[in-house]
Length: 575
Image (cartoon, rainbow, N blue to C red; front, side, top):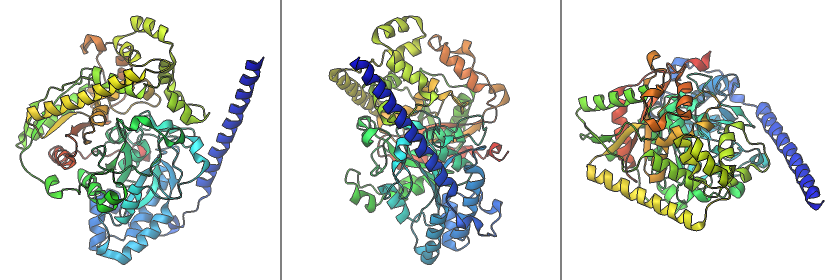
């Protein structure tokens, strides 16, 4: 009887909490709808073609020379954000808008003129989880709608000091742990290249905004590809700095009480999504300054080395085509080969590089670390009784599977899914087992460092992702396809993606019979679904270098950008 009463009480408590959260969602959406943006009423003589494709670097240069009015530029991009970014029938990329605030800041830029900072007058979007005064930092969680940020995070303070103008917030997934941006508060974001596909996650809203040229630069975070996945899916550039080079101070963590222990071995990195590699370098130049070092003493005092970034010396680049875990599609392989050929033709040396660990090991280790607590515990607790979105169903089901059933399931399902089931336990693992995983992570970092040094190379080049942007709802079942992205996070290395090609008509296939035997499975069937109807979608290559060689990583990315000259632009978001 007592148990029955307690269960009934808990059920009623949960129902009341869910009702409260729904009310908060309604309130937040009403606040957004009713907020007035007076600058949208202002006329501007700027034509769309004059500003639509300006990069952050070009914007700063034109403002500094007096050839671009920063206030007019804000108005033009604000109107573009409202037309394309906010429209829920289109990209639905924006959670909150700060057009008047950006306009007022732009007016002050006029007074300073050439004395402005590195990003003076450059409009930016700010990912939902990054602290911004007056905004909600939700991480896609309704429970975070209780209060707005009362101050800027350190990175935003530094960027504002550099003259950047926060224009809007980009949408993210609930709990920020799937590569697809959808939540109960603001809904689902869509890919500007194909509205039936995801822009990725967790910085999906920002990736879409940059691709649509609503902003030239977005400030995002990356703990498992969250900058680079949306950049790759949306055909723009993304850069994850060395994981401890840029401060994360003051940003929300999508866990209960803002506590996320897994950020100790694999920390989130703050970085840009941008139109060009130069824009990524501009971001690094703006934030690697004393204001950041003096406030967050955990960040090394390393100013951005412009000379190293602009080096034109001949490069030696190691490359690999597959991690042995998830075979890239034909477009990904072709894009990488064309990049290798173009780099070689330009006078660089490209050599095969043998990764010291494969995807079976590295992705399995990541799953073991993130799932060490068992049963998706910290993620469920972070919801505070909010209903979890369906995209997590597969992950939740797998994490909750009884241990006795896991043993049976591994015997009857395919090897890849069976391998992942063996990496976690219902109820969590022992402290001893967790320490062994930490030791394996340290050994992995040592092995990669040794392999890189012994190869005598400047950078590693590989497919950014094995597949193009996925249809909505598939990402939760295909997290295995993002193993290439997780590498740099686990190694703490800087890494970036550069778009290089589009899927061709004849490449809309994923031939199961041509795969290694241990990949001819359910995941391959899903990959074939992704490839169907994918013609015209962008695909990228990835570059990574050892820790604190950010300038070298960006320099190699710049060379890829130069020799490939990718210029395709999305149009689906206008339809």
